[in-house]
Image (cartoon, rainbow over all chains, first blue to last red):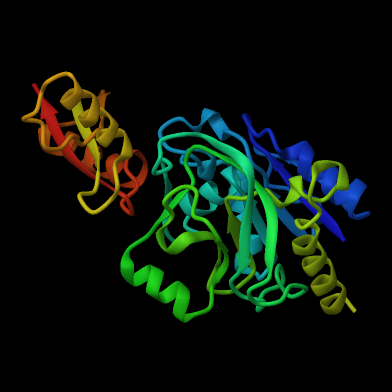
Length: 224
Length: 81
């Protein structure tokens, strides 16, 4: 399976995502420059963490206008799997591919540490190898990770089983402890935690692998 | 012509920056400060626009599409002389 890792000016987890998918998971990966509209035949897209375009204006607000996002939007509309981690989640929200927005952490501080996540749904290509309620240890590293949306949107996310992950101990004030959500088509995942940083035993947890493993096995089924 | 755009977090949205500023003000003896909302101001210098109405319309569109995120922020547009 081939992953396309988008590189914005200011991305800083692009190499982590490349390393995780190629070295730890044995898949192919290519970097996709933000100024291009060429997805290079990728089977899945990763919007990595970082500070795209300096996060000026709002996190992810400028990245959404980049040429590569036109291609990513089309790819997602055709059902292609798209994952946004941290800044990537913020970009997906700003781009309208996911509902809601990410605000300054309730405690004002940048938080960088492993957190416990609870699996909200196994009904997605990103979570099918997990069990409902399963707990994963995955690091977070963000200052603006407080997920907010209108009450009606939160109700809809829950009614449609689109909360992919919840924090066990909410670190940032996110509404309903939401750590990650799915699009209506279930093929776009946005999450503040960094699963790509939990794919190597050296990093203290390999729980992030389960998310990639889910996607790789889902892809193997559809490409047969 | 200059168009000024004010962007503020919606009243229903938590504003931890405003709260931190408020706490600092209270600790400085300004007991009367009940709430602080922190926002942003943009001054857009427009060239070649026909009149104030056209400038306002362009400012409104820019504010809605780019400067504010309507999910979490509200905005107000003023045309300066």
